[in-house]
Image 1 (cartoon, rainbow, N blue to C red):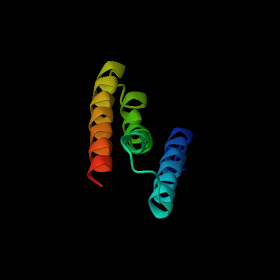
Image 2 (cartoon, helix red, strand yellow):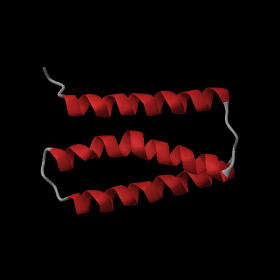
Image 3 (tube, rainbow, N blue to C red):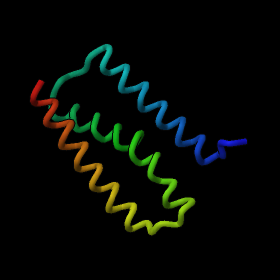
Image 4 (cartoon, one colour):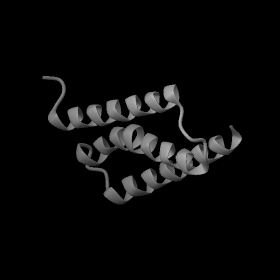
Length: 88
């Protein structure tokens, strides 16, 4: 089979996050900095972390490098979420 169990967990997490984002966008949510930060966090967890964790698990890259890269993405998405929440 072309999908192993680890990939399957990543796909389900990504699917759950995307469905949650679509639900929030369709039915609206309170526009505030806190909701922008929350959306940025869930985007980071569901889209960025799940796609980059394979580098640590299968390519044997150092976990410290993974943590630095994920920290960069987290700060970027939190800032973008806060800015977009204030802009709207």
